[in-house]
Every structure is written in structure tokens, then in C-alpha cells.
Length: 58
Image (cartoon, rainbow, N blue to C red; front, side, top):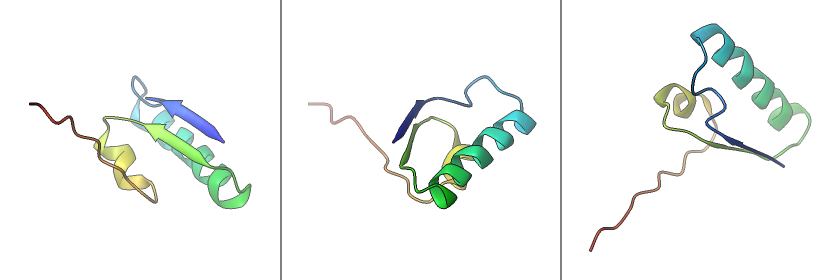
């Protein structure tokens, strides 16, 4: 299992793409569970499943 908190947060587009390719390879070819916490729409558009967490204010 790999848990990554904003792994592409301060990266240029090329490096972001390379990191996401590494994660995809680990998930699809190495049977690893990859959990990414992100604010990036780019990352969300790339992954298999997205869980959107929202804060309920009272």
C-alpha cells in the first residue's frame, strides 16, 4: 500500500505526468494499492477512482 499526500503539488507538468505513470504502473502491474490525497484536478482526471471529501458545517 502506498499513501501519497499531494505527491505532485509543486511539480511541473512533465514531472507530474511521470510520477502519475509510476503510480499507475504500481497499481495496475504490481498490484499495489495507491491512495493519493490531492487538490489537483489533473490528478483526479488521471486516477481510477475518486472520493470527494466535503466538510459538513453546522
